[in-house]
Length: 407
Image 1 (tube, one colour):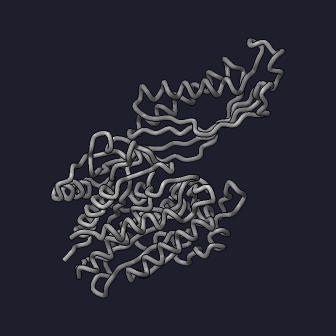
Image 2 (cartoon, rainbow, N blue to C red):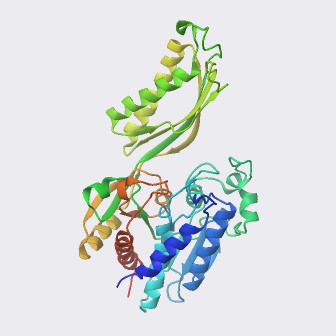
Image 3 (cartoon, rainbow, N blue to C red):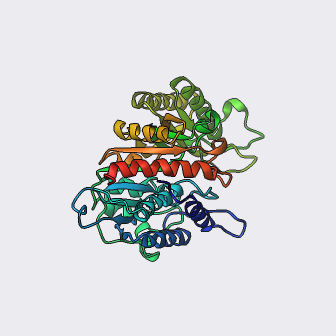
């Protein structure tokens, strides 16, 4: 059995047109008008596949395929997200949602019955651009955050998440977690260069890096850039630069990755020594003990820097997700399905956070990767050839069919 590759790729491109501005920048931030337009299109495709559409209170959308014979059994859940970063590509998250609908559609068209229901999920605010934290919808669904608190989240634009979900018509009534999955599988692009460089067609994702985010504020003293000698400066900007260099050296030893992704200075003037630097630190590592050790080393460095540079350093925790191990049996099924179709496969670690890591809290979970050309993602140049997307969707079809008890 094969998925309808033509239909799937047409839908990937159609969804990819939603949210483009006059300059062609594709942006669908969570609970925005553009997100609503994308959601409406996905719901249309779910209804085309005769799925029962349910929206929970955090705005997660579920397309449910069940029969009288199997509706009492736990479902196999699949899916991903369609919200995007600013100026995004068209594959991240979207192929998992569209591929999920396509899997069910093909099973229906070929007359296949399953022993378990299959549910496609579209999770709210995976990217975390407008509202924090990222992977919010799946985290709430898995019981990791209180729904009442989350709905009061204030966005970067001052909006309230719950109010925005209501405004766009996706403030559902059912409680998150209303369905307990038997298993969850997410189909996704790699978002990194490994598969492309090595010529691998299918990634069987066996684990996912831990992710720790914090916001750091360094307070110094503003002064004249021309008249203040170097040895008399209390330079918040210099201290921030030292932290960035320290992080690079740190993760080169631990095997993790670190990113200072945002930074702001005050007063932010060309001829004034910065009195304040506010920046974010993104630390990642697939091994919890190494991630924790990196955090400890960074905290110790902050104390040292306060002494040497006479600054004050304040830290604020933003996100803390530990590494996740996926289900070995599902990973083996992915590898077997790929090999049966004559496709090269590799066991992999996901470097990016994914909705699957949250669902792994409540059920056996794994992911299927297809390559990202040059490893580009979160960028309009993000690209996976149609052939690779279709190959991955066929493996997805095989694995979901087996998990659901295809008969």
